[in-house]
Length: 504
Image 1 (spheres, helix red, strand yellow):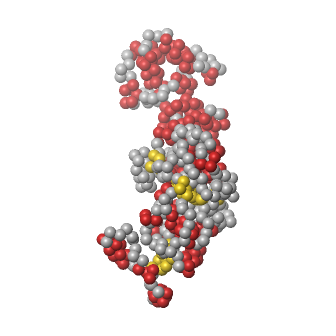
Image 2: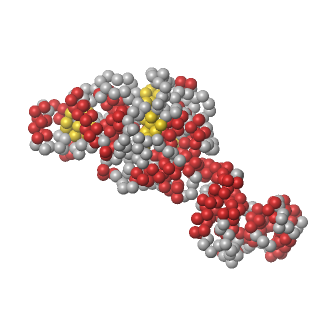
Image 3: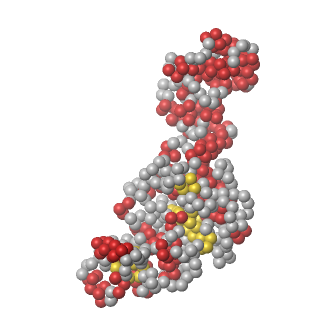
């Protein structure tokens, strides 16, 4: 069975890139009949932010992405916090030391700075001169007894032969060791592991079969394969996902713009629409990925062994989570970073809401969700019942992009209209008094002629058009007068259906 992991660091609120990664893990796991876990990579105490884990879990719950194992759920792979697995990493570090694939380094921070500066002056691209690799066992033992601090480094001059890297998104990739630091650190002076060692150990110990992670780890991929080879372990399948960018093409940052999931929760966006938006950002390429050597592995999903079985969806296709699972293919992900277009989220959210309110149950659900916000915004209004809100949703329709728009654009439907406001007076500046009088008289007479029994079934659009044709008032003037009388403000997508709210 396929087993995947979403492994965020608790350094703040979950951001959009993290939610997308969790989504892709969910989609792939369910696609192949597998499971996925939440694993917390909390070994960097300097970056730890209290309550981050709760925030991550709440964001996943809001999005409807339920992990199978992890914090709050338990499972056969516990503990799910790396800070609770330190003895495990140290035991693997000892294995590497004993086999000669790693060594202790006692160089201080100042000594390392001197070494790097000297290497740079000499034109070398190395970051360490391997000074401590040549220490004898007796010298190492003496330094340890003296209490000197040390790190454990990988010995990159003693690596086993292994197969070249293969990625489920990018296919065969270059074995680019030159881009790595010389003899990377595996265990720090505080005996906490670096990401390189901890991720390899945990993925093996937990039985992870597929690792879906950000493209930024592609350069470290050869190093991780080296660690698997040094430990004589079979690596999982890897898929490196191109990152998300801001609309201006810059890299997303927690310190720049609305990139945190909590911003979208507070902003009134529908979780299904946000998932839809994130899933389709970068999903839609049409290219062929050659199969890995172990194509018979039943945990690897192959789309005709590298050829897309169907057209990938475009970036505004409305999809439910089950539909995403059915259609998702790693081979259909683009090989370049993708910008998030907020206009596409608005489009998806609006059309998702339209789909929901098209059914009585869906309309009832939206009204109930908006009820507390409407009551808080208009505490003295007597028109904030669930039924009132349902009618407002139907009247506003095209103006509702997210649920907050009910309050944002529907104030005139919940409270008395202020016809003395500056905005209200501005509407009538270019309207002749005679035209206003003719319009109001015609509409009021027409409205009063409707019986109470017919009020909910009348075709207001046809009624308004008929009355306008019966008087000598230009269409634009007629609609402006009506907009002023009903709303008292400029309404971009004004509808005569709003007449249903008023008694004449």
